[in-house]
Image (tube, rainbow, N blue to C red; front, side):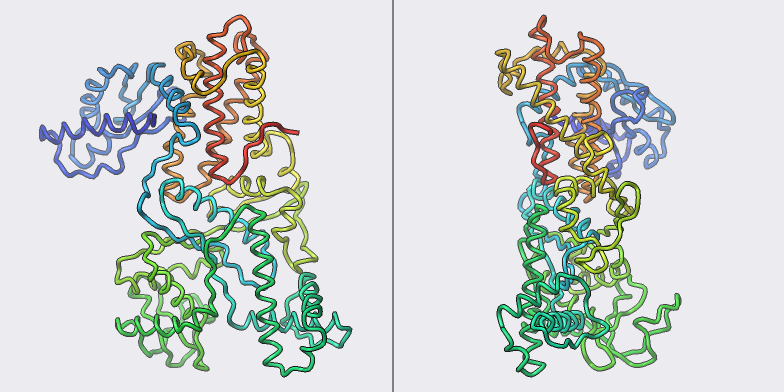
Length: 581
């Protein structure tokens, strides 16, 4: 039972009555009408802004309009009272029967409670990570990886057919530099003088590539012409880097459905095809860009060049698609990639970018709007920086990677579950601090431990109940006398459980999985508080030898807590644990 949705439905039915009676105009925008849990318990169990929203559009007095809702909703058998607060808010107090129905709904639905299949029949492509295959994934990639994967889980639960996609930048100068770096390490492995250059990639991981090249080719590559040997080294090294990336992602709990190669787009002629389509639409022209107002001269020079009219679609300037030497800019294959995406006919296309790609948003949105004739939007979410600490001190660089902490090092130090949960403890567009030490603490300061501990504690309580010959199956707990749950702390916990469907709905529709993390921590906090109260007051214990009926009611309540926690952990790709070390 979605308590908030249930009350909103009742309110919307009354709004429809007002329209039919011509008290308010029909066709008013009702999307901003909300039913929410107040932050302060003094304002009741639930609150709605319906009178305020309608009065603004109907030019009426919100408090007068609110009186109508009070008169009608006061007749509802599940509502204890309705009061008007402030300029016209409605504050509701609900009867305990209302909250008991929440526990019943959770026990009936299990871990599926709160999940609405709003995306059935629709498809979505989420491109994330997409790090250049020039080295191991680092902590910056990790945040986007976790965000993208959990968002995919949310959308999949909502019924969408989800494609997790990785765009492989396996063409261009950075791959040439990678091949030269790998060849130098190959020469080292053979004991030969190296041909190292300044722009080569550092890091011990390339020494392993050099050894692998030696094992496969022996001294053969030394005898070949540069173009031939670099082509072989390039193919070998890129594939090895991709295998490394796949393995790291898999150990983080992420499996991509699709890898799209930039090199493959060139080979298929997709770059030319996409540019020609823009040309046919009159969106490619030869011209001279104005000097950037901000003084950024990176893409600017006084010369005629081929430009895409991205400013026509909201970008702040048009964008070059060819360099001075006639070769394509970095932007051109990105156009081709999104052109190729559009041919696959997704209902929704989502890109997860690192913060350093914020300047790329407007042009990519422009490309998708242009190539789809305005029928498709591109959704882009940015993931801000992660700062690493250990015992409160900044973590130094990694020798293996050369300049950054790798995902592998993070996995080895704290494990995938801590990474997945902790990197979602802030909204994606806010910077986040990640402390290795806190990530492995078994205290309240470590949110993933705190949430897992709630699940494990409940498992232990249910096990002890079974050992006392109490049937704790969900079917049996559904028969418990839930009307015995009258303690305010118990009702407060159930009220929090009632928010779960709304939390999931908002996290899904707004692409904000951090809402799940915040919520799970709050649920765990309420459960642990209940557990602590039972230690102080024996009458509040979950297991009461002197009162089997109350015991079963409380077991039903904490089993509901466990099911919601397990549902949230499942969304995060985290396996609930039955016991903590």
